[in-house]
Length: 385
Image 1 (cartoon, helix red, strand yellow):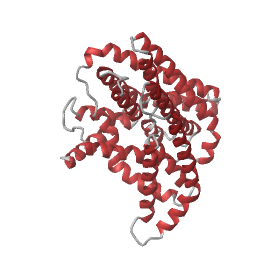
Image 2 (cartoon, helix red, strand yellow):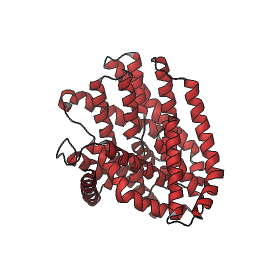
Image 3 (cartoon, helix red, strand yellow):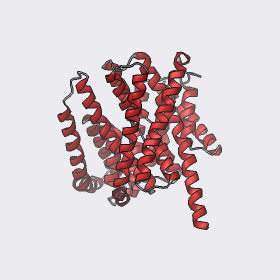
Image 4 (tube, helix red, strand yellow):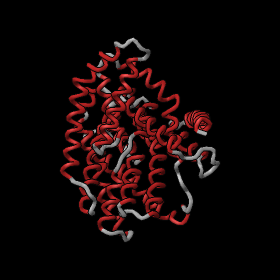
């Protein structure tokens, strides 16, 4: 069954991606939408299974690993201030507006803060692919987005631990913070000293693809340790990619891993997002879904935009950065699942949030395409003028 499902996903995702590009949109948009088409909600050709979920997880980990490999470390250092502004702006505004929305919807104070925190989450895995297709991943804007995503993820996870401690969850806030500090300190040290040594030693083994295998080992270990310390695995994979990007093995690893990833794992990740969508009973809450989708899109767009403007970006670049931060993706779904388990979200609200997350994921690529295209046209006019 899995083999047939993988074949169906690859055929439909590649065709849908091609159609999307021909229509002037990033290919990832077509892959997201075709997932809905072939999933249980429409044709039912592919169903969500635990094995498919694991394939999808590998896809997003490898996607962020590749993004790390393509990161310009010097540019990353230069955009630290901008990333901080964008990350903080993209958290504060959705958090406050989400809280107010919860109060207006009749939720308790704790539930309202949780809704605000949920809307503060960001997952740039979708944005990374759109940036790659637009050749913006290595730009100042692209590096700012990636840095802001790391900041966003860490702050939201710590804030979640803080909220859960008040909600009666069995969480020690100081332990959570210490785990984050130790992980990032350790990750930077290992990336600086251990990763180059490990690659050199492992690459000398008399086996096929020793370099690629050693790079994937580093990627998966970083992802696992990141998830273990409570940060999303994608951040660990990204840091692993950045660590390898400053070694002599960068280009070889990038070429091999990109081939592996985009042949099977990344298409499965994009398509599986649509496959997991459930639309049963959606019409009963359509008004609330529309309202929360608008709130989710605008709060993140405006918050990140303000941060980008404070960092000195022009309006089109700021809008592009803001749109790239809109997708809540798997990070928000993980937080929503925690909320459901701890009774901070009802089953109905959880189902609504899942649809809202899907909406934010689908609108992100075309919005990025629009704003970054407009920014390029402005720059070209300025240059030619």
